[in-house]
Figure 1 (cartoon, one colour):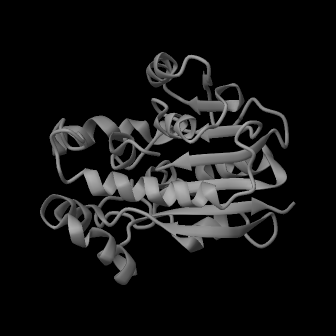
Figure 2 (tube, rainbow, N blue to C red):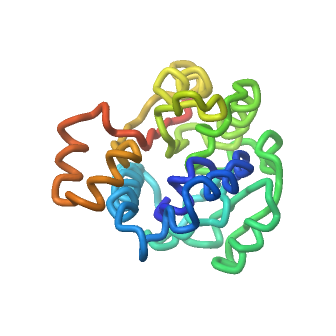
Length: 243
């Protein structure tokens, strides 16, 4: 949740095949916080949205069980550790073993495992919070997305939460990007029957605008975010499981 190199590549875990072309197109420093000033406020906006969302939940950080679906190299889990969650209660799953290996090097006490999000190896109602970060935007196959969403619902306890940290717009002319709009969330997560929307936080601006402001006019970044909602490209949506 906190590392722009995990976020603005607009994909995680299940969509990871897009990473290499992304960096070939944009350069290796595209999301480097130390060398690219366009990244900083995008990252801060991601962090703020996620921290605000989690802060409003009724979660005991010492006991809450959390699963990150499409965890990549574990940046979202590292953010949760920074917020005081117990590593013994955190889990992450990703399709690619090399990313799991990197995650384990950073947080060896977390249950990182390689696996398919369509068949999660956890019992029904295991987790208090199930999250994904920039995974569904790179999943234009709606049948695949629905399978994963159904599994995320299944392993969430009734009355507990699913958190979607994703981009609400696709990319014109690029069919492999599909925006995670409110309508798509309603369809994927059966909102109104199996889940309900518990909250939405505004995050990063659409990358061309957000990167420009971060680099050239950082003092205006959050003013634009607040005053021009259509320019917000990323949102953090929290769902509560009701059945």
